[in-house]
Amino acid sequence: MSFKDEFELLLRARYPILYISTLEEERVEATIHQSAKTQGNRAVYIWDFVDGYQGNANDAGTARRNPLQALEQVEKLPANSPAIFILRDFHRFLEDISISRKLRNLARLLKSQPKNLVLLAPNVAIPEDLSEVLTVMEFSLPSAEEIRREIEGLLSAMGRPLGDRLLDEMVRSCQGLSLERIRRVLARAIATHGQLEPGDVDLILEEKRQTIRQTRILEFYGATEEISDIGGLDNLKDWLLRRGGGFSEKARDYGLPYPRGLLLVGIQGTGKSLSAKAIAHHWHLPLLRLDVGRLFAGLVGESESRTRQMIQVAEALAPCVLWIDEIDKAFAGLGGSGDGGTTSRVFGTFITWLAEKDSPVFVVATANNIQVLPPEILRKGRFDEIFFVGLPTQAERREIFSVHLSRLRPHNLANYDLDRLAYETPDFSGAEIEQMIVEAMHIGFSQDRDFTTQDILEAASQIVPLARTAQEQIQFLQDWASSGKARLASRQGSLSSRIQGQLRGES
Image (cartoon, rainbow, N blue to C red; front, side, top):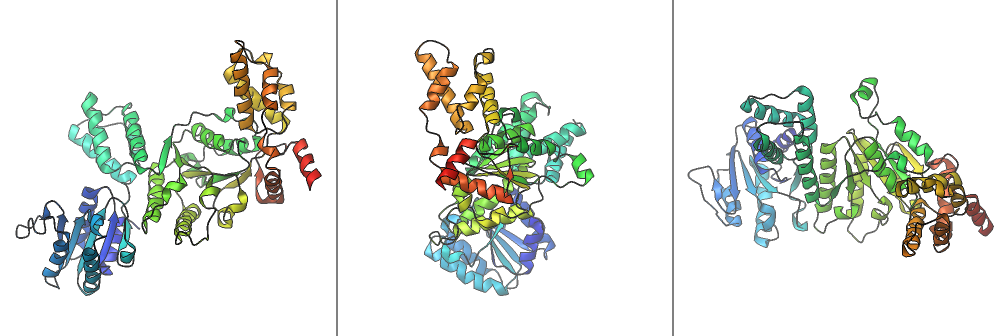
């Protein structure tokens, strides 16, 4: 259901006070005016703190700098006069006891009158005593069709049409921006060289990065990692390569649904985060990183609002990859009562979206501790597949050494004994291999020479790998994956023979 349809439904149902979270005042007010005409040609009154009521000559300036008087004005209108009162930035006054009480009184009164209050705010900030009185609505970012109309209208005014291909690219690039930001960045492009050009897409993407940074929830991540930068994990790589064209129109014509996402489970340092970055780069999709901790806020309803905002931005930017790092830490305390159920509500909103989304947002979630993850997230339908990423095998360790040394010493790779390095480091994860190479470089640099195979082995002797301190966790994950609950990301298993022998010896 579109915002306009839902808004008109709530008007007919006589929902007295609507709270609309949006940064696009001008656009939402235009939509409300359209709805007012279709709903019995209702009068629309707009108030803000600085100018008071606007538009109507008799009431112009009324209730200036007086939010309580702005509410009292609603009662002065005859009871049978249909009207919509738009109150801008009214969330700032909701903590005032007189405002709170007046809103609750009006909520009772307006149930029997064809009047509605609409509170506009940039975010959801509702005191607990008003949570049952206000109905929260989200005003979505402009759709692709709305963006296309805006760009075509601008081009028509300029008399310089774009080709269909460039127009499609412009529309796709603008998705996720407010209409005001779109107008601003297009005006900047035109002011620069007098028309819209293919290079202006970069301007739009920079504006998009700025917008995402301002959400303080999502981060626009510039991924440069390649699939070839991942050592081993051949099963995972094959799975990803087969789905590389899954976002194309050709795939839709074939009948394929959009790829939904992956859950990567394993101990730290085994390449889960690297895989998320490589997926986005390989598929040429923008990568958004979600900091789940930033979803949670103190005010009633704000955490759920941030979750919906995150979903809204991700879907507006689709097709894209949404990377959720260490999702197990975010929802580990699910079911506790310490936060008044906020975590459960945020999780419920998120998990419902995962199950029902039909937008091309590919979710890559990583987890280190499967034991604390809610079972709902592991059910089929949330993700396309769950992969277990374990410690690299000897062949994979050789490949990991080759990847790092090829990048650091491309002309001297033959000087390093990759087979020996792989054989002598059975307990090490990919991250620990990278760290030992860095330590070896320090050894060589401090002696004014290049680092050697022996330096790497010396560095390895000084590092205690996580595998030796987290054996129980590794065994649990291995048993969990082996029971058929996850696919192995590596073809040759995920634990070295030495680690498996150590685990069997202690069990």
